[in-house]
Image 1 (cartoon, rainbow, N blue to C red):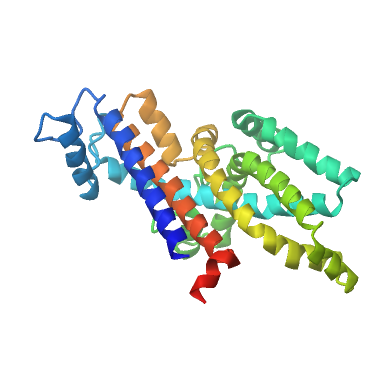
Image 2 (cartoon, one colour):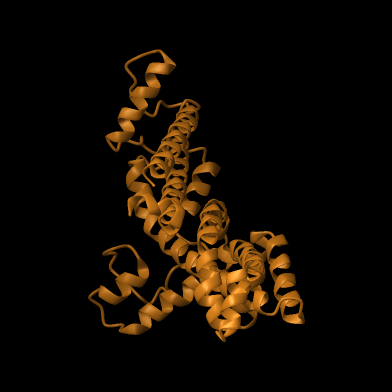
Length: 320
């Protein structure tokens, strides 16, 4: 277990070093220096750049003149709220659809679920988002088109998580503000989670179909256990480690899709801020956004790798 954890942290450290090298190279492309480097050597400047990062000095925006890290932290809660809601959809709906397909393998239900996930996996995220807006917002009028909450609500930014602030804020709107913010969150979260959810459903179905062929599953059936108990208690528990690993790989897909999703729904998050920075050639903000989003991907994957190691009984046994 200790060796596995050490390997995880060493891999994460190497990834972080590579990430800082890339963002440092981006910073050198700016016509205005991001930092006041004392050396003319690029090699020495890289270590000075690391020092500035550890001091929370990420440079100043060429457009707004404000601190890049402050700009990122202002937009980050909106992105994290959308990301967590999308991850919830990925794991709950993706695993549930995979279980339904595995339970009914070879039937029309299995073929329907797999066909739907294939379509979802093949559809570009920007096209899927526009279809959702056209149908649910413009045609049916169920969900709003853009933003985090309607303009008639003024919510004081306490935590900057809109769902949280609508509940803890000092206002007279009651729960109507919370449900309005939740209503704004649904379409962007579905758009963002669609491709990872389709992948998760297919991987869950594949893992369960293989596990249901094992001898211990046949033994459980011979003891009279119900099919639901066999799948949810025995099979899914053994498939959970691989599913967590797959879920970690979907984080990068979500981070890529969040830029497009936030632009479609005018979501005031890091992705939209980063896209505007690219259009305005604001190199300090581009560097800061890439650094922060990539760092989030690494941290999420480290966290999932640690959980997977604790779920693996072979790696957990030496600690007993």
